[in-house]
Image 1 (tube, rainbow over the protein chains, first blue to last red):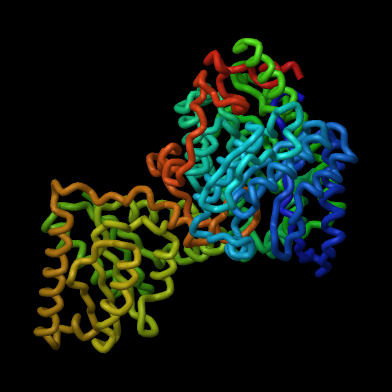
Image 2 (image 1 turned 60 degrees about the horizontal axis):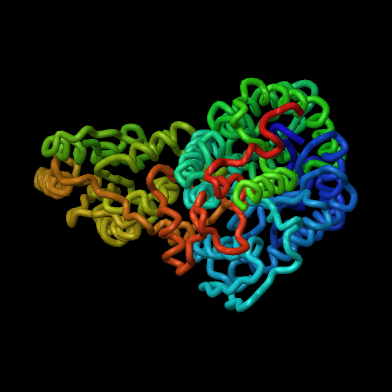
Length: 367
Length: 267
């Protein structure tokens, strides 16, 4: 695949459907999530990403298990996370889990690292939330080495030391999975992504565009500062959430009770206010196209757009219809429009194939 | 120089607003500062929405910017149930933890009777001490009777307290003294204290986004603080054995590899 990547990401919440009071079981929800992934591949989307949570009402506590299942039933789909908790997971286990997944999926894996938003998860996993930023920095520093150095000696503040440790299996073809650093609000994470030349994903979902613009601009500036390329060559991903029907009014009418009662959106600003101030688009596929294209105006040409479509307790059937519309009516237009006037110097998001090619080229030029 | 004047009075006209104006006028007279009034009553619904949605609407964002960007602050609340009003507290709950650090803040309150005057020292002062604001020793409490013509002495006392408080604030704002700076390098603690929302999870209320400009610690310092050796700089030919260039990093030759997938687009 070349050009921008489009896909869906899911939080994995079990939320009652406010229109009929029914709540899916955890089993239903897990099966629904993998059904969304299969549908995403079927309609030609590029990426499926799952969240990671360790408390009800969320079900995806073991992302690589789920992604492994999906890998076995898909051919092209890129499997990712949104996000993998770099603070409370052992970086050694992340290195192992994602390396196995990378082999099983023949390289169709990347991952997005985040700190996590649930306070008690830190103590449940033996950590202290006040060290959240330091955990994100130290744990990634270790993960980075585990995937790049055969034998690692390590001593840090947060995990037991390692002497002569080799993370197995080694990454597929010796190429580590590409890493995105996800953040809403922390300039430190934009700085971390820039330092390593990794991707920066702004989950955009709750934030007015001005915040996203500043964070991405900071990341691009620092990416160039650290010598990875020009600011325009930094690897940027964005989130966004949509609900579509053929007619805009039908979309608003159908989605309003979901919006008004959703744990995340509800009982605050109106749907209209929220849509005016965030990426949320409730309307026709054409309106989704227009709003999504407008993101480029404030972050520049970017590499990955993920949509949240299974929010607020929407039934599976409705969500599958949303993915159909993304695949048939939205993404083909976005591919074409985003490609228009995109400078040739703006890279695509790295994939296993491109990283492998780059590494081989580097080996040839630097014997 | 700019001072923000936050007033949490609910009625129109309001004694709280009146006290805020008197304090502002006395401060302006001494400093020539430009006062910007933030009337929380007009932002009450926006404040509630920010609490639930996690981000400010446009008018509230402007108000927050007025307050955090000002050289000094005058904060005036009515006394409700023996403390500052809920609206007043909610507004300050929405500011970033470091937003008022080092900023001179004159505190004032209004109430029906003089019996609540210790609200200044038992409620307002701890709130702004927590925010690490610089609070002048004189806070101003005005009871209804302080405004009364029938007790000229009380009115004079109020005027005298206003003058004294404004003088103390002006002293902290004096021209030529550098604007108070937020402490650097303490963001990690601030992050950990509140709801932390990162990555793509749904969740709890994300706090106000920071201004990223210039407010982060360079990464090498972060690593050094944790005792981690920085990986080789991009383009550094002397890479450790076994290390490979990070995705998108320049190769050892110093040139950036072709864009993944061969650059742009023939899809």
